[in-house]
Amino acid sequence: MPLEDLEAIAGRGVTPMITLEPWIPGAGVEQPDFTLDRILNGCLDDDLRRWALGLAAWSRPVLLRFAHEMNGHWYPWAVGANGNTSDEYRRTWRHTRSLFDASGANNLQWVWSPNITTTDAADFSETFPGNEHIDVLGIDGYNWGDGSGDGWRSPEEIFAADLRDLARLGQQPILVTEVACAEDPDPKRKPVWISQLASLAAARGRVHGFIWFDVHKERDWRIDSSPGSAAAFAAAVVSRERSTGELGCT
Image 1 (cartoon, one colour):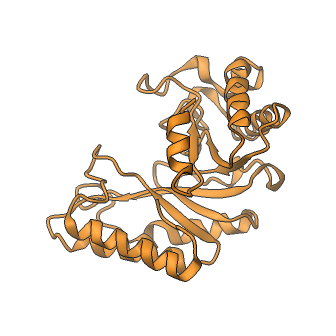
Image 2 (cartoon, rainbow, N blue to C red):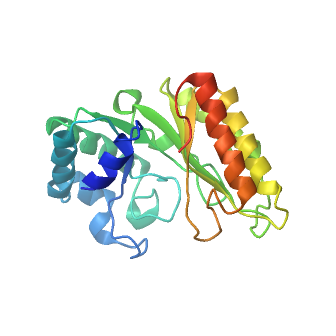
C-alpha cells in the first residue's frame, strides 16, 4: 500500500487516484494466472481484500481505477486476451467492487477507464458494468505524433467522439484519466496542443479534469519536455482554478 504517496498527494489538497492492475507488470499479455475467469472464481480475492482493507483503514477519499483500458489488447484482463469476454469483464468489475464494499472501503470512488476507440482498441460500451457500479467515467488517449501511423492529432480528433459516447453511458463526472502528447521538432506545437486539451475539457461541463502521463517512455511525454510545454500546462491549471475553484489537471 503506497501510504507515503497517498499522504503526500492528500497533503496538497488533492484526491489521489490509484490504478489497480491485476497482473505481473512487464511479463506480457499472456498471463493465465490473471484471466478474468480466475478473478471471478476468487483466485485473487486475498490480494484484493488486502488492498480493500488497507484503503479502508486509510479512510480518506481515493479514486480507484481498476483494470483500465480493457478494450485494448495489451493487458491480461483485456477483452479477447487470454480468452476473456466482455461479459466476464463486467462481472469481474462487479465482483471486485462488491468485495471492496464488503471490506468497508466506502471511501473510494470507482473509476471505469477504457482507452479511446482506435484500430487497436475496440468499442468500449460492451464492457460497461452498469451505472450503479461506477462513480467516475474515465478515458485514456495520447497524441503519438508524426512518427506514428496516426500522425499528429488534435485533442478534438482524439477525444471528442469518445467523450460523447462516454457521456451517453451515464451521468457520472468524467475524467481524462491518462493523456499526454509527444514532442515535435516545432517547439510551439506541443504547448498549443496542451492549451487545446485544456480548452476541450473546459468546454464540456462534465469533464472535471485530466491526468497527465508525465513519463519519458515511448515518447517524451513529460509536461516539462520544453519550457513552452511547462508554461502551457501551468497556464491551463491556473485557468481551471480561476474558473471552477478546483484543481482540474494533475
